[in-house]
Length: 304
Image (cartoon, rainbow, N blue to C red; front, side):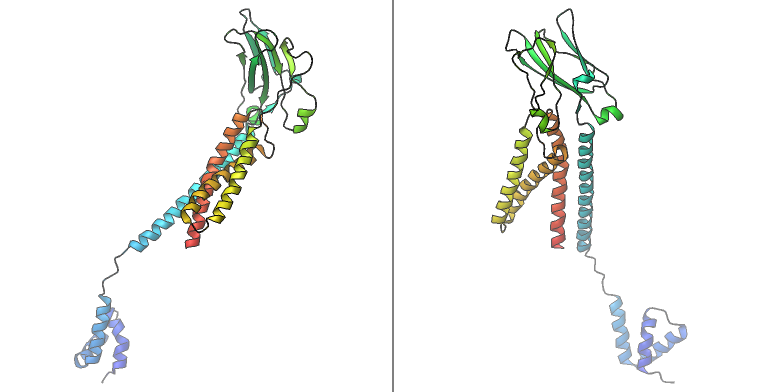
């Protein structure tokens, strides 16, 4: 029985893949021996199977490298966000909560050798002391305050203990205790520092310890820098190198603003300005890295 070329054409894929039975293979081979057309078709099919595989893996490696880089970026972004949140939480938990003098946070005691001790109660975990030469007579005037925090009360209890006010033997003319307030109104309510040792150095009126305000200057400088950078970015929007450099500066100023708001809010006066500045920087640095990473990922998504 003569087999048509159409039937052999249907059987050739099975023959090439070695999936046909022995009888079918014999039938195909007998037909090919007498049919040049089907023989050429078989040769073409065998040639296609022998094509060399594409061994260039460079595109795949580039894709894997890009995916790995994006994963690292996202991981770093998550870590920096966690660090920023942890720094803000720690700043909140350790923020000084000042103790009024009515709760007897400190006792002043003079030793026989002339040194003056400030002995803090068990409720005190931290204190601040500053002094200056007395206007009336000799010696120095000291102003101190004491505080505790959520952290010291509930997590890691600490005690300030005692401190020598005049370790070099200077005369202590007077010691005042002041209780800072977190609101502006208190500073104008007429409350003053309380004399707890020595002679009143201002007999004609009270003395009031005021907070430092340089954090407000830093904040508004950062705001001005953000506005300036935004204007420069608009003017040089077609210059990629300038845009990149200005973007770094803008994100740095923005990170400081966010860190300042997370620590101080919109009330900038501080009785512990150095501590607050450190807390702001601890939040701002990881935030800056987060903003840089987010900016990079956005650019990558735009190119994709």
